[in-house]
Length: 275
Length: 284
Image (cartoon, rainbow over all chains, first blue to last red; front, side, top):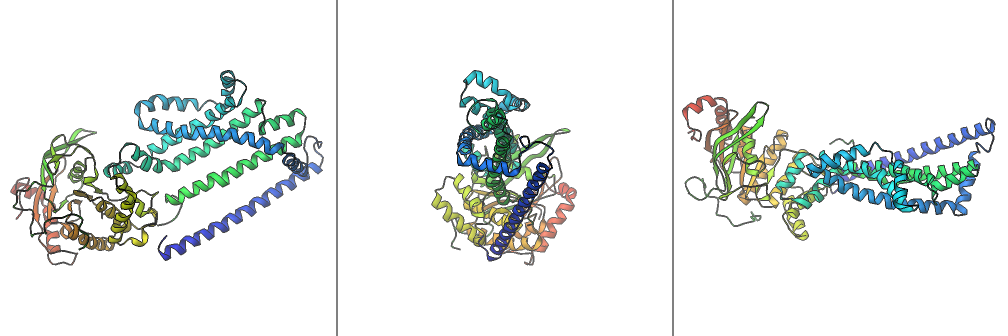
C-alpha cells in the first residue's frame, strides 16, 4: 500500500499472523509430543505384543532407515511423479470442462448431469477398467488419479462461474470485453476462490485414489511400501510409511493450498477484515 | 484545464437548445416491457428523449418509473421492443465502451488494484501496456487517488471506489457516459466532495452524460437539463427544464435549493402535471 497509514496497519497485521502461526506451530508440536507419550505409555503397558504395536521410537527409527537406504525417497519420487501428472491433467482438464459446462447450456444438461452422476462412483472402482484398458502400467494408475480428482474440479469451476456476480459480466461487457478476454480476465479470476477450493478437494481425492491404486497394484511407490510391510508382517514399516504419507499431506496443504487460499482471501477482500 | 482529451466547441450557454445538430443520444418512441409474474408489463411506452453533445441530462424519478430501463437501453443491456435508441444516429446493438456505465456499487473487480481496474478497461479497448499505464495514472491523479493506485478494492472507501469507477469511465473516453445512481450509496459529505470533483472534470471534458437519480438536490447540482419522470408501468416524462446556474455548483450555490424544491414539487404532484402538459412538455 502506498499510504503510510495503511502501510503500518498492513505490517501490523503481518506481525500478528506471524505470531499466530508461531503459536499454532507450538500447539501442534505439543500435541504431537503428547500423542507420542500416550502411544509410548500404551506400548509399555504391554497390552499388545511389540510386533503388533511398535513404540514411536521404533517407527521413527524405521523412517530414518528408510530415508537413509533411500527406499522412502525413491517411493516418494514414484508417487509424486504420478500425482503430479494425474493431478496436473485434472486441474487443466477440470477447469476447461467446468468453464465449458458453465458456458454452454447444452453441455450443462448433458455433461453436467454426467459429472454429478459419476461423483457417486468411488475412484478406485475405475482401477479394474483401467487395468483392462491400459494394462499393468503407470497409465492405468494415472487414469484412476485423474478420474478421482477431475470431477471435483469440474464441479467447483462450474459452481464458481455460476456464482460470479451478474454485475461483473455486465461491467465487463460494458467495457467491451468479449469471448476469451472476458473469461480470462474477469470470469476465471472472479471464480478463483471456488476453483481453489475445488483444487484442494481434488488434491485430496487424487492422493487417496493414488494410495489405493498403489496398494492394489504392484508397483514402486508409497502404497507399495505399505503393502510390502504387510506382506512381511512388519508393522513398524507400515506405520513408518503412514507417517510419511501424513507428513507429505500436511506439507502440501500448509505450503500449497493454505497459503494460496489465504492469498486469495486477502486479495479478494474475503478475509474477515472490517472496512 | 489541461486535460481536455478531444477538441470540442467551447461550452456556450444553453449549448443544446436551438441547434438542429444530431443528438448524441436519442430515444425515439421507445417501448420496452418485461415479462413478469402478471404477464408483460411495460416499463417505458413511447419514450422520447434527445441528449445533445456535451449536455448533462439528469433523469429524476421514483423507483418503477422506468429510468433505469432507459439507462439499460442506452447501455445496450436490453433492446427496445419497438422504437429506436441511437447514439450519434446509429442504433445501439450491444453493450460497448462508447457508452460506459458508472454503476451504483460493486462494479470494480476485487482481485485487481485501483489502477489495474482502470488499466483493464483500457486493455479491453485494445490499448498498449504503456498507454494503459500512462492514461490510468493520469485519471487516478485527477480523481485524487494517486496514493491509492495500488490498493485493492476492499481497501478503498465507498467514495474512493466511485472515484475509481469515474476514472475508469473517463479513461476510455466514451461518447456518452451513463450513470446509474452512482453516488446514492455514499454519505452526504462524501457526495458533496465528489460533486465538486466530478464537475471539475466535466468542465474540462464536456462529456455527454445521462445521469439517473432519485435525489432532486443531486439533479439540481449536476444537470444542464432535468427530466422528471413519474408513474409506473409504464413511466413517462412528466416535465423537463434546463438548469442554467453557473458551475461548479454545490448544495449552497444560489438557485440549487430552488431547483431541487421545484423538482420535488413536480415529483410529488405528478398527476396534476400530466393533465397540464404533454408527455414531453416544458414545465415553465
